[in-house]
Image 1 (tube, helix red, strand yellow):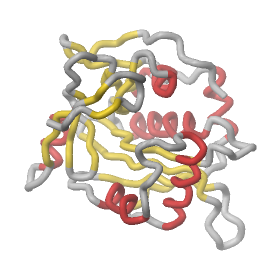
Image 2 (spheres, rainbow, N blue to C red; image 1 turned 135 degrees about the vertical axis):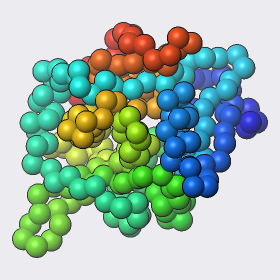
Image 3 (tube, rainbow, N blue to C red; image 1 turned 60 degrees about the horizontal axis):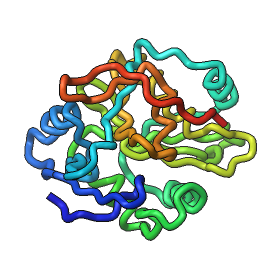
Image 4 (cartoon, one colour; image 1 turned 45 degrees about the vertical axis):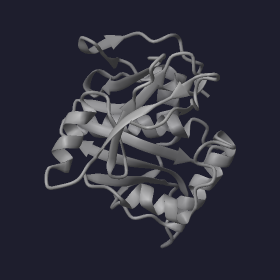
Length: 240
């Protein structure tokens, strides 16, 4: 169990996590089992919130087969259909790191990851005991040179779905608003094509505007005392 630390999502609250190490020959199976009961992976550790006076963090997943994009989401899919998407082995690059730095500076200035250096990023990507890719999203290539990297997502493939560990993108790209939403939708379509029923989005936090986007990709299931059940979150903010 970790010591209490200030909650990054709800002012005045403190977070505490329970965690376990993922190692040995059955690390992937353990990660799958823990994922189904609300744990998330970070490098070789699986964790979930264990806050004594708060239960705002709720594990959520999208039911891929039943997902139908909204009108706004269809526009985002159309706008970005020219992107070249590649599932790369989990090996960090300077291009990815510079994209991450720009994303953090734009969307999460002063956040817990703002001091991440190249070695920290390499550890985040490369230290994985499970089946992991980093999915790259590039603009169309010019000649023989690869196109500009505009998005990426560290993604685990679990037995019952894709788990989006961390995504980042060019949040200031004037011609591609909604890139973050596109990356999620691409994962939903990938899961469906692979015959995987779910896309795990991590924790939706009641009362946190930063987490409201996770309610846009219904149908959504949350983990409750009765298991995974469909639910209707509070209305999310409009898509950009």
